[in-house]
Length: 380
Ligand code: TXA
Ligand code: MG
Figure 1 (tube, rainbow, N blue to C red):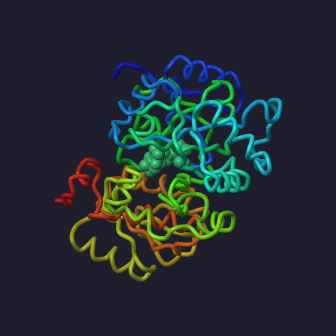
Figure 2: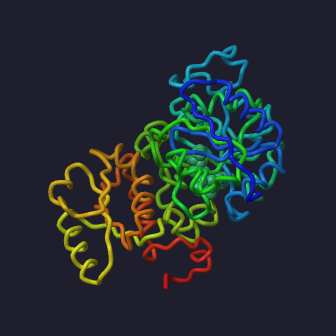
Figure 3: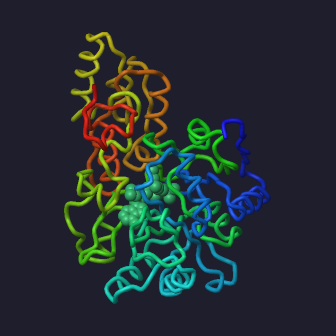
């Protein structure tokens, strides 16, 4: 394994690369590919041996289930599908395709109604639905659960890869377990070079935080992980969601094991300041202790923090912050700072996902050892 070299394909020109990658998927190999949220590490979702390689490459705990990525079924559009189009009233066809492929199992009336509404409004897009597991999905995809997480990514490379592979693709984010998700091909290489067969480089991922995970198997749908699609939009389509989940508690860890707190940790300690004034005060305090702080700044904060190095500018507005957050965390980590400082964000829309990742990253003060939090010990 350590001597293997990952083939990297740049996608500006060639469709050939996706064809090569699709053959690798069919042969049971591992392909990292861009989605609109973050890079995924994919394998044939129906092939338990291929799926096992994902866990090995990521060093991921076996009790953390994967998301199954699907494309619109061929019969829906005779092979012509614009990924920018919403599924709309073709949602029942998509669900039928998922059932025929053995990806999802039998749905109750309520599950079907909600799945239709959400798929129609938001697929392809950053929304993952937890539904009853179909018979063709191996247990290691779902970590033994009787439910399966499914999404249709809104990225032309991802959809084309799924289409050409002819199978659904199980894929977690393409990072080593415990690192933040990759939003650039380079991040994937930093974590997994030599451990995977192919990396499709599609440039930076446009959304930058993971998909929103919604559980449709409970009496009232619930968000298990806030993500690229805001709660408000989901509630607009299916009504009020159950409050509470996705808090990184032990409970949330049970229903969605990847939600244990501290999943999104940089190596440095992460501190979230209430405002720019507190950020400056913390910076001074940290320097006085003889430590180095790096700043993740929005455009509005740049002037007040002039001259403080290192700093990484996230951009203006929540969408920019989401898009650049993980790259900023990785860049400051690479710089070797002791503490990363960032201002709090309004937890509305995609801000809920940002606030969630910051809270998890800041829990226990920041450290990369993943296994540690599951044993509940603190940061030394
Ligand atoms: O945007 C995304 O969702 C990216 C891209 C690659 O699609 N994928 C991603 O996968 O973030 P991963 O494995 O890093 O996160 C998957 C999340 C985890 O929190 C996991 O616990 C949850 O989905 N999940 C998967 N299957 C589940 C299930 N059957 N029930 C509840 N939660 C599940
Ligand atoms: Mg992940």
